[in-house]
Length: 312
Image (cartoon, rainbow, N blue to C red; front, top):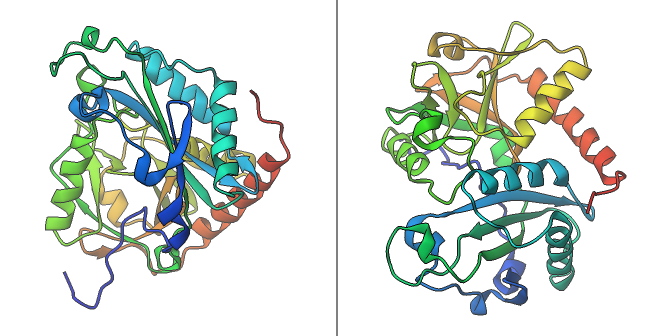
């Protein structure tokens, strides 16, 4: 890696010292981060047995809350995990935790639900008999400016996002080892993050975000068969369709990705993050008119979402 090149991750945030004293929601209590603890017998710690969701607070409103909750509850149902709270109770807990921290905007939440504390340190889910563990970590969090200025460097890695009958990539599970291995492989190749292929060799996703390219005025992304069903991903697709921007969900190879005019990532934290290079090959000229247009449309959508009533 060139020593003059700044390394990024898609979740690099500006330092905010207020986060040293945040209060965290743990199973109904809101406590200082130093007091926020779960058992070493917890299913999430022991086995990665749990689901999580990332949410973002803009000007007092949780962006696309209903869509995030649909994904969260569907994932929990798929693995027979009883959340123990309704959607309305989760919204109330999020708002109370934000209020306890004096937070109103530029806030990121990692909501985590595990199968709870196990009676014995073994795999069987029936050993989790104490009910779920629910944690909500809210932080003051804004992406560093250089993320959007310089973009992310990706490296194609050997690790793939697998078949649904192995571990469905649509499950936002605590077990992220597959993606962590991909990220490590990318770092060893001198990149910031990993570009992962699907089981058939087509371009799929990154280890942390959904992936898009722009070619000849068209926006392309994967079929969605082997990637996380990202809320921001879907919003970008919807925005393109609503604004007469040609968008395709399709199989495509690294050949098309290398030759793209632009590439960007989507995720709740960074919204739309440009890609500077893939496997050392610069993407386009560095001009990113389509990415900038989509980013502006997304900001406008966030403002519309602020005035929509959140469903309890």
